[in-house]
Amino acid sequence: MPNSPSFDVDAAHRHFSADCFNQTWTLLDKANSRTEDESRLMVAAAFASVYHWLQRPDVTPKNESVGYWQISRVMAVLERGPEALHYAELCLSKSGELPPFYRAYAFESIARSMTLLGQADRAQAAKAAALKLLPEITDTDERSMLEGDLRPI
Image (cartoon, rainbow, N blue to C red; front, side, top):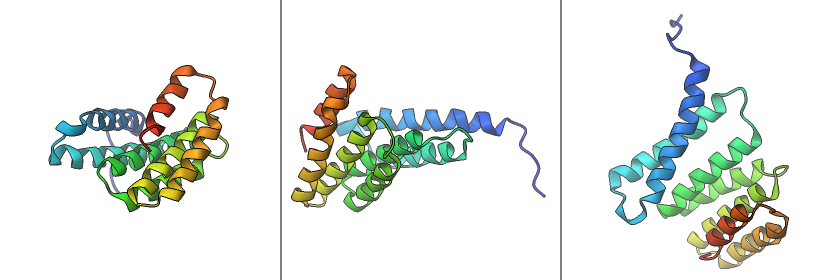
């Protein structure tokens, strides 16, 4: 029988779910200056964040949706279309009952993935689904962020 850890496991999951998520954002923001090693670290951090969220007793569909969205974005940035689509679909599957902002971002990740896969019609349909939710997003910062992310698709 394995020994019990000498630290608070729940606290560790709380720490690493957020810390890995933030590390992923830092590496995503590096864009053109990210090294190959940093790209690998970005992938690992995104998956680690979701892993730690899934270990938490307080995990919600929102946490899962956002985590899968982030993995999809990482895969899209790295031009790994099939993987981006897989995690975009997981994001969408968790976003059904969430506020419009999160549902719209699920469609944004589908659109971004479909663009990478050369499926312009499906990308535009997903983008249209995201845009249809824009009027329901009352927070102007959230709306602006989504519009900015949809613009290049």
